Image 1 (spheres, helix red, strand yellow):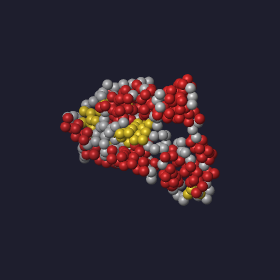
Image 2 (cartoon, helix red, strand yellow; image 1 turned 45 degrees about the vertical axis):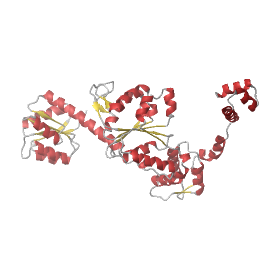
Image 3 (cartoon, helix red, strand yellow; image 1 turned 135 degrees about the vertical axis):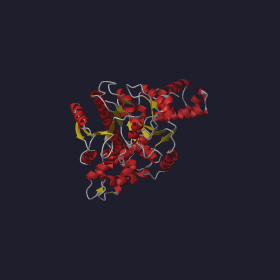
Image 4 (cartoon, helix red, strand yellow; image 1 turned 90 degrees about the vertical axis):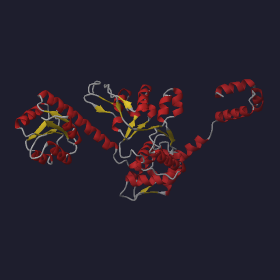
Length: 442
């Protein structure tokens, strides 16, 4: 296994040769230098994953070499080697950016053990940096476009609570923009320069959930080949977004509850308690009250999540936003072309009920752009379901006979609680009234 390139700088040739052999035997690719200036010159030409630097050297010492290497290659993980080990030296080295230090003389076994540990740390650090870069990548949908009064009030509330550390629970149908609002809150908070870590709770198997969010140590379970940092730890000092929080299994809710109470956790397979500081924003498209009644959601867990509860309206209740959102998506997916909607196409968009909300609108606009000719989006470029909206909406508005009968019986009983009086007004027998109440669960 190639364990990366290692820079070794020491003015003692014999030590250099021994270290070179030790590293090569473990799968590392070492390059050795007795002159620190030559080593720094080489570091400008290629990237080194790890560097071992001696403290006492000429013409510049190890701390000076370390400082210059950090300017050239800040992601290189460095270790200082010294025959003059002391607390002061160690502190100075760590402050200078070194990951660790080792005192000479050291055995082959001691050195290899350290090299392996440094390599594990380096890989873990690169993984975290990569994930953070991924989750902090410019999120085009982060802009919230609305003319809707209710949405404007939600945005105002979101700004007001942004700097608070209170947990936020965002409710809304799929596609209403729950993650976008969570990012909006994070962007307006004092944590904005720190990570925003989204976790799709529905996409993580129950057996891996604890490891995914809390991390694990090497050997904690079959397949755990190395230490792995959890998603919560990645979000330290930032915001963690628990999407589809209603999908978390009950046993895991108990473990999360403990974390939410004091921000403390242990990685899987480890007995070291770690403490972090994150702001929790969660979201669900489920009915919270029904989940609590059914036991799918623990009441104490819910209360820990819902310091502030925000409900996003579906797109069908903010129709005034459809033209603005459509224009935004046209520009997003075709920035170089002046593509526009025909009046007939816009009319169809306004009449549609949008069961998939903003996400469905985005996908529909993107599809239409691909098909559009002469830079005009016409009705024929939309999928078939949009043309049956009016008929479906009309049907949905018509109550069934049973609905009408049930509502009428409820209204009569409300004003005339005595069953005998109610049956006379309804024009049915007491037996029929009893049967109807049982049927409609009144």
